[in-house]
Image (cartoon, rainbow, N blue to C red; front, side, top):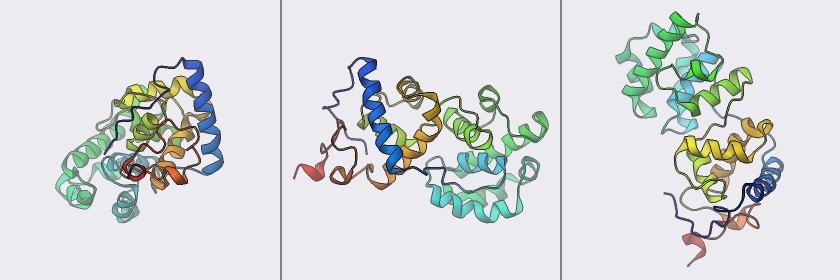
Amino acid sequence: MMYNISSNRFGKEPLSLKQKHASKVLHILKKKYPNAKIALKYDTNFQLLVAVILSAQCTDKKVNEVTEPIFRKYKTAADFARIHQKKFETMIRPTGFYRAKAKNILETAKIIRDKFGGMVPKTMPEMLTLKGVARKTANVVLGNAYGVVEGIAVDTHVIRLSRRLGFSQHSDPVKIEQDLMKLLPKQEWFKITYRLIEHGRAICTAKDPRCDLCPLKKICPSAFQFPRFKK
């Protein structure tokens, strides 16, 4: 559920004021979540790619549960390319959308095996040639696998918090990413995703955000604009 926050006073402010606001938010989140990082578990770069594809419309916790036995046996793109699709569908079924995910992962495994010498690509254009890979997945894999930062990974938490915090008025992930890249210095692009995710899980939840416990409550344009605080 996404509430419509009409009091978003940063929506039409000049970029310089938005940047100052974003800087304050960033400072607080860095103190609150200094060790924020990816929650998915993996040993190889291809396993990372598999886990990120599986995480679409699924919790990281569930993905980790599903991939633990799979990753013990299958490590590389070549390993995954040998799995029969029906078998793989059964293995990943609990993550949801398992037919599409299985098809994309196994096709991507073959592409990486045949076109990239078994190595997960290191550039955004190459990543986007893979099946089931859009900018969010590519940003996560490039950043965690190679330290390559070409953008900001925008998932459901980042979408929600970007709108509530006044960083963006868009709902499209690509447009939100563009807004965030304008507001934040590049050295913060990689970590901001995980700081926002942790904050979204701990406090700024989708259905019942705890503004009363939020370290951003004095500067957040959406603070206390939810049903819990209007009873």
